[in-house]
Image 1 (tube, rainbow, N blue to C red):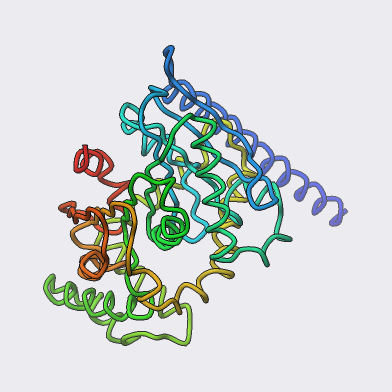
Image 2 (image 1 turned 180 degrees about the vertical axis):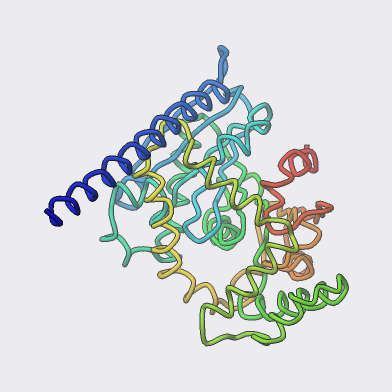
Length: 348
């Protein structure tokens, strides 16, 4: 009798859980339909494509969206590594589509590209391979969209990848724009820590001072210490709310499923495992030097992840046909997303 009661109780719990899941699925489907409608593009000159293209021997996911095919093409390189912007970029970059044809790419090991190919490609997630992937994509875009050159914008890790891409094939890029620009990976976290602690003392934030002082300056022997630094950089930049909002936008992205959402999260893990140990050891000299294209850095005024002071130093250290630094007030590492309209206006 007792076993029957326990079995019945378990079945009821499963039914309730399935019922809750069904409600969640229905809600997400409604949100996806609404977002597909609200963010749809219409008109004779629009372009709205989403497809896999073969880059570096594997199928990789891209979206191409814009209100006018005659507009300049802008290829956006996401950060992370592995933090594909496609799941939320449909909303964040909507106002940009009036001025540019925006291409978002789930890089090797990220998002739908990881979902399509699986973890078996992990060994191929290298800077050299991804630089060639990016060059192949740029060539594809020039040919398919009938453009001589395209604009390249790189955020955070994408700013590293972008530097390597424009150095490899400058003739297919009209400009490189770095944001959350990484300047000197070996010193990045140490400078960021010092600026964070200075900010905490300026604000009189005792919790921040206590936690940052407890872990001390990097390098750290554990990920938990880096997590403390990242926690306070996000809080001081007010990025914590934005980062949470990307989860909601990704869950309700038009055409997406829970599997796509899981692939997105897994992509961050896989990409970080492969790339962070390599990027953290890059020398400053590998990112500086001579550029054959105009270089612009548009940076949040208080970036505690890729410090603004270092981004300024990066631009001073390079040679380029034209270069400029633009600072976005009241913003940090995620200025390109959190202040997307101000970011856009800064270079129109």
